[in-house]
Length: 368
Image 1 (tube, rainbow, N blue to C red):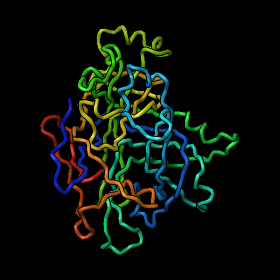
Image 2: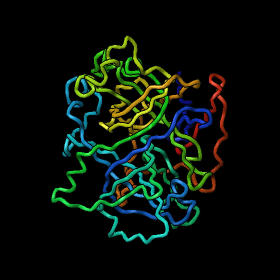
Image 3: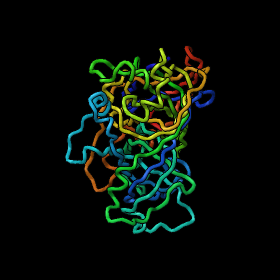
Image 4: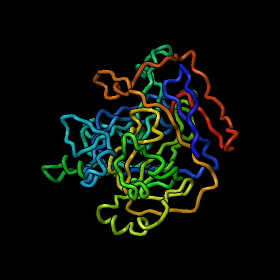
């Protein structure tokens, strides 16, 4: 079952439905990818950290190719149609990379414009942090909402890559990120993809795809400011492209089944490749924000398990358009003025219990 998100408060620009992690059979998503780092920023104190224990941050673009099958007629509606001067065969997603770099000197020359192999937890939906206009300003300085999807890398989960070819940059544009996760199935494409506008998928293909509910537990450096300490949920779209090999052969039994294996509350484990970003317009329950990334995942290895005893929860909120600012700081286009000031910051709300499911559901005043 799914629960609609609560009505938003006028002072809450980015409402979310969040879950108490106890008893919920949904987990995080791990991502491995290549990315080029720029303008690595050190947090001046632990309270300023976006995620507790991660003391450096940078905005990174993660570029990855569109597989040939996703550009065929049946699958073209999956991805949003973006017309720009960039390579149409390469997707790009921006993340706030948060790193733990301790007991070593950070020399900008060794980091800026350097390619790294990264491995850590990713939260594809944008979260909102309240940040000061300048980390060194007085307590009454202006506050901004910094809204972006976080990527958290710990314990040396980053390694610089030494170029050995003249065409170094283009090589990493054709290597898709690898993700792994275990989550609770929300439903199949039959019920969760819209027919107006049409997804374009055949009846059989809609049976062989679905949405999986996942969550990320985040503890911010300052517990009294958004996104607050708790689990924040998101969904991923899993698809077996059954009209192309090797999935035409590997998924033969799945195709012949009378019913879909993407039954609600079934646990699904997967290691797969990121094939693109799903167009929100074809989702029956789109995420809150336009900058929320719904990953299109193509499994390499997978398992369906018995149904979970708990109901999963999905959010239903209108898509909003992010506010952009122009500045040399790469974070600026992910920021908007906050309506709250330092002297009006309050403690986070306590979890409330839903009478329908018995699950602790908390409405956050920001994101985690």
